[in-house]
Structures are given as C-alpha cells and as structure tokens.
Length: 95
Image 1: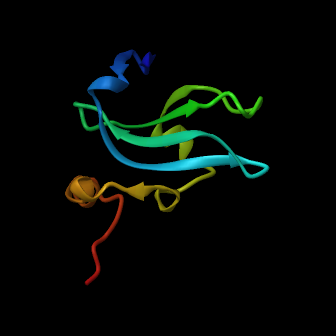
Image 2: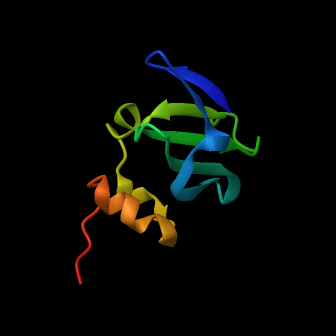
C-alpha cells in the first residue's frame, strides 16, 4: 500500500515488519495488523483486511494516531526485529 502521511510518501513494501497481530470477528479471521518501520524511522500501522468484517478495511496510519487506543503489547514482535524495537524504545528487554 502506498499512502502520503504528513507530507511523506510511504510504501509498505519497503518497510520492515516489527510485529503483527491477527484480527478476528465472531471467531472468523478478518485480517492482520502490522507494526512497520519506514526507512526514516517512522512507525506506521498497516492493516490488511480479509474482507470478512465490514468494519475493517485496509489502512495505513502513523503509530502516533494508532496508539491512542492500543499499545505495542498488542503485537507479536518479530524475533529478528527485537533490536529495532528496543532501539526505538517500544519495549525494554528484561532478563
């Protein structure tokens, strides 16, 4: 998906996926929401709908607009992107 956000053009195909979670409606898979990192270190949230939920549609928004009602805890962080998440201060690694 390509979208202009705050005057910048983003292409989800060129972003790194940091995490994702699958969405369900009445027990049926309705899509996946991805936490992605653009090349300019801007966090974006990309939702891909399966078409099974009339209230869920494909979207691309900034993480700042998304996080007002959700948190990074919603996402399953991709193992090889853990260092990016720590660097961006999304999570703290506690051992």
